[in-house]
Amino acid sequence: MFTATPEAVPLIDHRLPLLFYSHDALRFGQTARAALVSSLSAHFRVVVVGGDEPSEGGDTLGAYLQLDPAVILIEQFPFGCPELSGDIVSLLEAAAANPRTRLVACSVPDILADWPPIGLRRDDWARRLADRYFDVVLVHADPLVGRLEDTFEPQALRVPIRYTGFVAPEPAREAAPIVLQPHEVVVTCDSARPDGTLFRAAIEACDHWPPGESLPVRIIAGPAVPDWEVAGLQAEAASHAGVVIQRSAPDVRAMASCGAVSVSDGACDTVLEMLRTGVPSLIVVDAEDERAEWAHHLAALGVVRLLECERLTGAELADEIMATLRLPPPYLNLNRSGAAETLKLVTRLADPVHMFAGLRN
Image (cartoon, rainbow, N blue to C red; front, side, top):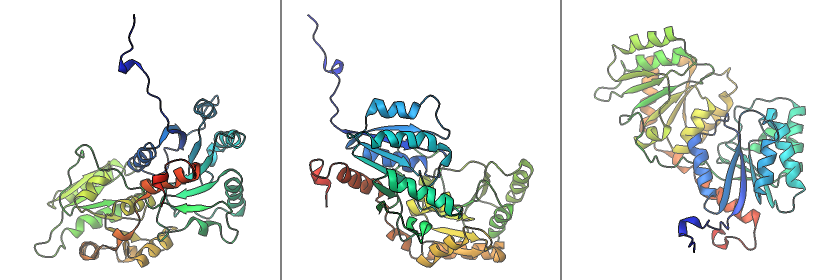
């Protein structure tokens, strides 16, 4: 007679099924997304689907039908990813007709600071879809930094918007592939439009540190910088102790763990990652850049320092980096409990009467 071993008996999973539609091309970092999924998995059976391209053969709808989720979280759409609208709208239509799907939420990775104005027709399109299909919009940011509602003024969204706070990446379980030195200055640019001027100024800054306070500098050139320019930067760096030039970015968690300073041109993915992890940031801002208004807003809040690009020299950059290090840390006041708060909101909205009473305030 066959006796089933404990390993042969499948466990009954009483967690509500949750379908998380992800879009890998978004600036939401993989580590932050993993932290969010991990938090949700404490009380939901999470299945992640999606990608950068529309699926073929109804893969996404097939995943929905197989899982029959009680909760759907869709990343960014309809406030982005218009190329995926066919897949996602089919999914939303199925959810609207299914009484077992209790909650449909939009998961906005952060504020849309680098989403330029695109005309009333697109705004109306996003607003109509949000109001028609979604029960709530969850913005994984602190409203002090920026508000989604401002994008749609003067015609407001009807769907409720809730701010969860930033989703901070989980602590690294393994040693980072690159070990940063204490107070290392990490210099980055928007990967789509890298600026060699900033990189050269960062190398020159090493000639202007205060006596006894020299800082190591790591320049992340990125993939778009031509090989000849990288070679030129490496030649300049060779005469400056403590300067490293590399193409790929280290894990931002490693930068946070050793108190690094971020110097950037204000690329939103970089700045928001620093805000999530509490790394002090200096932005070299161009008044002609569409991100300048947002950068000035962050500076007014005290969460970053600014250096106007017209003043960018090695000496000025060195002074501003030291000032960034010496300032008190107001950026620590930003809400970074986004993973836990998202779980609390989703569980409350998905089943406010019976499920997970202990999570309620």
